[in-house]
Image (cartoon, one colour):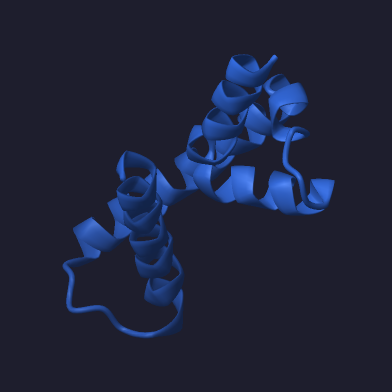
Length: 90
């Protein structure tokens, strides 16, 4: 439940950031500015995660590109459950 809830929060944050470029927002300009900054910082951190944790990202049962894209969006919320399951199984 922890992973699902946090993934939804990230999607909301990204949606607000992208939406702020497409239409006017009821949020103050300062809030919009910080939402954009936080979203960009998270994406940068997740890009670094793809590089540093590539072996764990590659544990995904589907195509590697899917796993990379999901890690860019969700970071450890995507690859950590797979890594934990692989450690328990092996």
